Image 1 (tube, rainbow, N blue to C red):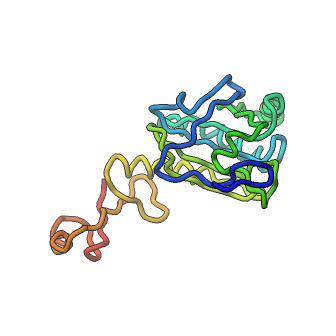
Image 2: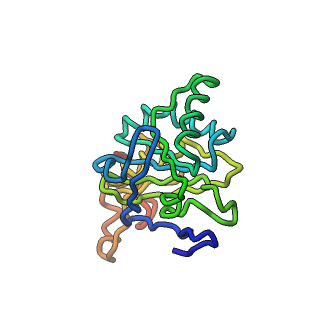
Image 3: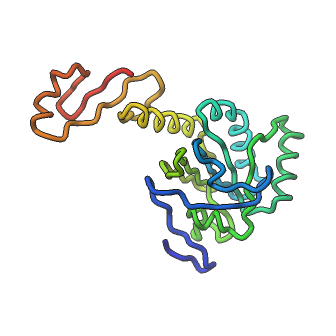
Length: 217
């Protein structure tokens, strides 16, 4: 990882390696990465409390909370604001928008978690986390990362789609094509030997060529 002039690590964690460990204060009490062992986790950062784009994202995450739970996935937010600012913002969202926030939000004033996950990009702002989203599997392995600029909100539908795709790949040993949705055909891994490639067209898949085959689940 590289280090910014603030002394923070600004490099990115690596996919398919253990997610950086943490223990932090949240709006639901202390949380650590180990608390989510055995479940999927979506850890997401936002630049600041009481900002319009972040508010829309939090409302959307809250409304999708039960859908994430159905996929055995917890949600965990983060910003560099204080716990008291988080609590005030959560109460404001419920009062002004009628939406309760059911997931915890990490207080990260010292930017320890943000630094470990590469959430602070000095080119954007030295004291704010960009819109980063991390999908961590039940073994604590980082499986996907999404980064958005401060000016543009994320698609929670895409995060749900990606989570479902990852779980499908794990369960069935397949890949998923562009824009894949549950119920659509998946991609069969291509053969790795000349003999296997020769056999592929006779294996019962929807095969366009030896390297490109689909099947229904």
